[in-house]
Length: 200
Image 1 (spheres, helix red, strand yellow):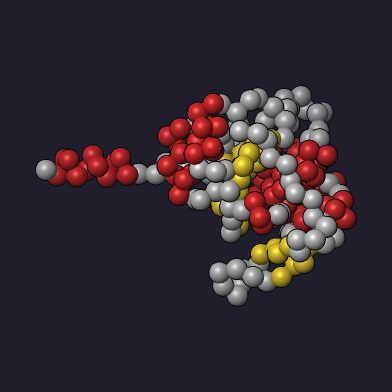
Image 2 (tube, one colour):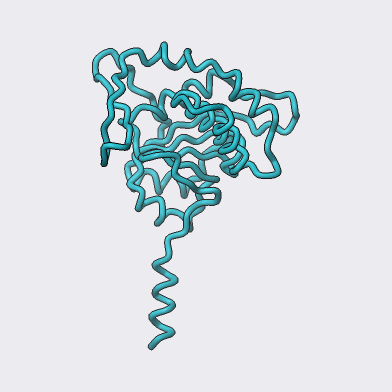
């Protein structure tokens, strides 16, 4: 009888994707989700996923998105192995516009391993949130580990966050959320372009 209970407990365990973490309320990051991670992701009640790789999304993942009414935003950023290839600024800027729009939350950002492309996007988000560079780099390196890339850190450092502020001039910044200490971004509906999800 005890063995049966233990086996059922194992079935109920929710397995997060590799390198999974909460960035802040409504924003998550991870490596590429596998089918074993779908029950975990379902519990997050995701509205959107930002996918930062050029490869097509697997059909079983697309089926999961369709079944749970999750929008997919794909930004085809190559995994850069050469040391001098930099992140595409336009793709990161466009991904940031999706990311800070609370209408897309809860949202998951992921690439292949949740390290470099995801780390660069989160690093630029942190600059937008006025984090000091030391803390931004510390967070990036915590996920990248021994494979931290100097080119990614340089990209984050030189990324012109004022471009994003110019694009979202109609955003109202308000303190709102589940408690007084948590900040959320709230949007005026007028003059906002709706982001275009990838067809699933």
